[in-house]
Image (tube, rainbow, N blue to C red):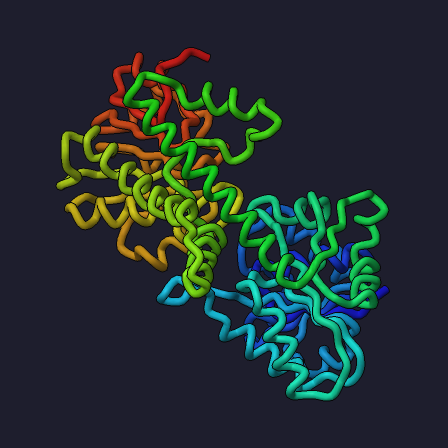
Length: 437
């Protein structure tokens, strides 16, 4: 059993801390925000993530997981230190590493013997070596540095951590590798692929992975747009493509564009780094532009369905988060849609099973309902922007009765176009033909 300190109690820190403690290790998650630690010690979780609350509760009760503000003391008491603080997007698109360097200072000031310092945060390629040099400059204590990027998907992060596709360890130290292998021993026994590489390659793996997934989304969205012009069906096309083992069906789902805390930030950071190195990244830059265009295209489609404007119209928005099974609204397509409707004189009633509280921080003056029925009631138009399961069963006849004017845009392709059009509803989606189930 290893003694582990995880610095940062955000999304990555909490999921990693709960997961590693579930592997049988002694984990303390630390944060400079006292109110955050107090909140966690009351058994509360600051964000929604399926299965996480139960995982934390189980390991707190077992005595393997705890939370503390005493960062220096916990660094001294640990064998392995994970850095899991935020690296938000700076104004120029690069990653803001302010928190990373602050943590590095704190670690350097509290090292008291050999430890492994492990980076979970997503940082630009080359950051790890700089962090190691900074700490070595400030202390004569011995340590090894390891890059251990996370590949967690919001909405399934617990499953992703406990049953990952792979574990990436970037370090030049055999001792660090052995200690990290001990942390992930349950996965090693289950034959989870363990990839050992350099620090720089590990850092690049995370950016390359997220950028490629963003590329797939932008690609299928552009194919969907072309399908609308040539009378083809993107669902059939994506399915046929996905059967090809060289392509895979994952992330081939046309929609309103990608969002969240990772893809937009990470691909911009990669482009920013490439510019510093004078390396063109035309495909990644294209994915960014295509994503911005897709969000705008959804606004244009909806406006067209409503007769050319949003003026004076009561609009129901179903889905505010960037994806289902999370409360994260960062870079959500609902943001650009809401901005456009309000700017053009429309009124918004919104419903999301988990995201309303966070969305209300951005748009405090729109109406937030407790059910989709209330949001849709007496509306002049309805748009689905997140594919929550409860929206998949919406019935055309019920929708028509609730609305003032039956106009529906399904940007996630989860409704039966044939059923809605037969009910006399003005209906559109993204790249699909009328069909029967």
